[in-house]
Image (tube, rainbow, N blue to C red):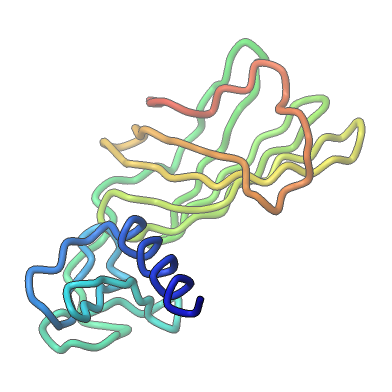
Amino acid sequence: MIEIVILFFTVIAVIQGSYSCAQTNGIFKNDDDFRSYYVCTNYCDRIEYCTETTEYYSSLERTCKTDGFLWIPAYSLTGVQEVTPTVQYRHFQQSNYDLYWSSETKNHQFTFTGRYINETQVVGTEIILSLKNKCILVRDVQLTVKGTKSFCTTNIENRYSMKCELPPNYAFSGCINY
């Protein structure tokens, strides 16, 4: 019975793995997220993260570091987007690796906090507060920055979110230019 359980968890780990180990054992950088790296054991990968949010994995030194990196966000997203048909203004503020936005309608408040994980990728959390029923919807957001004030985004409901309905005409996904 124990062998079946171990086999079951091993199969899940292999199915969920997104990295193909080039060597039997070793540590390799993650090009999609500089805060993490892959550890390969017998060709099975697992992802590890640097312990501090300000650290990034250095493949040259094979350790997490807080300085000496040669990357910065490729574009600035600071600005204001006019959202129609509700005539709502989404205010973006980028500061180094951090990105924030906020907007408000008569019935909802929207806030986002995110961080660049490499030159063009941002991950974060959007919180939508319904002012009418006091329901809080949490969404996980990923942005791929295409240029200054231009990005494509996907977002999904966070599994720990309250079960709220999305605001009418909510369409914060796809590609956006402002």
